[in-house]
Amino acid sequence: MLSNRKDHSVSPEKPLLYSFRRCPYAIRARLAIRMSGVEVQIHEVSLRNKPQAMLDRSPKGTVPVLVLPDGRVIDQSLDIMCWALAQQPVSPCLTPGGNIPADAQVLIQQNDSTFKQDLDRYKYAERFPEHSATTYRERAEVFLDALDCRLQQHSYLTGAKLSIADLAIAPFVRQCALVDAEWFYATRYKHLITWLDAILQSALFVAVMEKVATSSAT
Ligand SMILES: N[C@@H](CCC(=O)N[C@@H](CS)C(=O)NCC(=O)O)C(=O)O
Image (cartoon, rainbow, N blue to C red; front, side, top):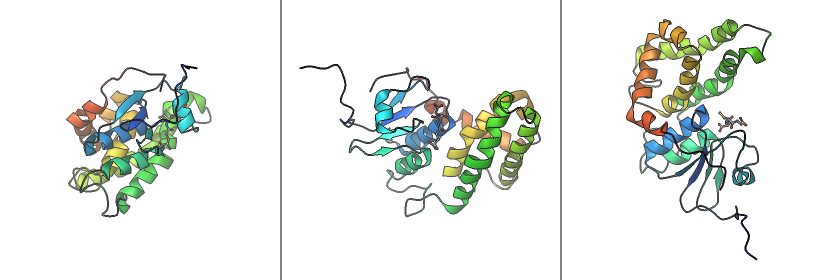
């Protein structure tokens, strides 16, 4: 008997990325994918109505999720970045062994732990009434200040060239800047502002932020 139900065990012909346009984790994954030139099919999902096929493949229910034609599922943004960048014959962003260089690793770890937590509390301060938004923002500023100090030394976070640290961290700094752009652009973090603006205005970033229709299927 014919059934309308799709068989989710069937692997896609080309890599399939479940994504959410504004999610910083999904943005970093899309940046690495685009940079590496790998072709993927992007499924923009609604976080309130996640496709069952995505949940079947990755029950934890966060984006991004990458499904490969061989059936493998990669559901952590950093792992997706490493996978994508490793598709290039020589990736300037990874160590020869295909890993994230140590200095980038340390910064990304700080971003994904303390900074991300402070950012969430600053952005959604009404959900964390123990302190004011300004207090949470001041906590987040410790990381912003550290990034600005680095950027006084060189144009990108780990040196003269764009690295995986820039790709992984910029989406979160963008999110922080957007909470109160007037405040952000008036801060003393001038090098950080220049760095962020250069990335946001780059053809790479503009391309990954192009709108894709939301899909609840597949
Ligand atoms: N550790 C995960 C975190 C991904 C994550 O938290 N994504 C958020 C969106 S920005 C999400 O999907 N949240 C689930 C939800 O909102 O239902 C990664 O690096 O990929």
